[in-house]
Image (tube, rainbow, N blue to C red; front, top):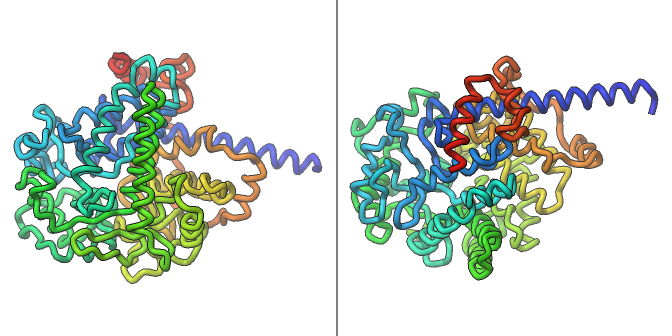
Length: 517
């Protein structure tokens, strides 16, 4: 190699390192800005409380900044757990005005309506749930600093709570009787307005107009948000569930579906619970958790796999019919290590094909690019979401598709940077949509920037051959002026202190003192 080419390569490597460092600092700034003192809000504007699966993804990234704070994120959420084991999808901050978000605590009335189900008397929560990614998050958080985790007894404290959460899903929510957990509200699988819910939702009578006020439209364009009629159905389902005491056996559910991503995350987290149980010296529980994980995987294949479509689909529990829509949820089971090889490779072919355009559009669209209901700007009806790309990245690594995984990682990092950590992106243009400085986007950026995900040079070269470097369209490179800290420096260290402004450092140290308890 000539001296000139060596210099060019060296300059490029230096620029890449500086760019990554800048992105790490910017992502950390988002998480610090969204920290409330005990947990992290997804967004200061649109989502001003603690959300369940958001906090799990946030903890996965936060562990690279401060493992203790990541532990506390999960512990705060588990503090809102109900007596029946459910982890509510929102833990409300009582300091936030009621009109800042709807449905607000006075709608859910958890302490009163959920008393028989064990809703905590001292916390305000919703009554529905979100995907069970928490045990996976807890295990990854532990691995970030096992010594600190053991000192605080982190795994010993969270294991019984997470086990109770999984038992609730296995016992109270197996409404179809086939070994899978059912979602009883479109918000529970996390894909709120997905086209996959259109048919099951069509039988739900919307709540009357004027009986509620949508707070979400004050922070986003109506064109990006669920429609009014869908929102009315969401309210109806939630109020009916509330009025039956959040009792799964007693509620006449008008909506009940088995979702692939929800159950894939249950299987992955059950497997993580096995690792947690083994780490705390309970081999019997570890074996049982792993057995249950295998059962969920087998039920997924038996009940939700569509070999002709080459993807997992949802099942309407009330009619027994399998859905016909291809959504990103159907690709999520790729993360499971015990998925049959033929199913794994079929999923990969589907992702690479025209329906999802892996490597040819931004990240991974939430709905079939060729489907009649595709809308690239409307929430879960087409836009690409960063958490789903992160999950699929794990699936690619599991299959040994390292070059493709690296191409997706690079696309993720570029999109996070150019959109200022947007909530989601339009898959064709790469335009950031929804709110900015979204916490799980920043957190998962930190995870993908960690040394664990840095590939060998030959993989980088192969990934560059796969990716089109000019495909990203976005706005605004994040400035360094507001940088607060290097995320790969352990909180409390001299380097962390030197990188952090005094006011932020004081707040951090105060919270760490509480965390150490």
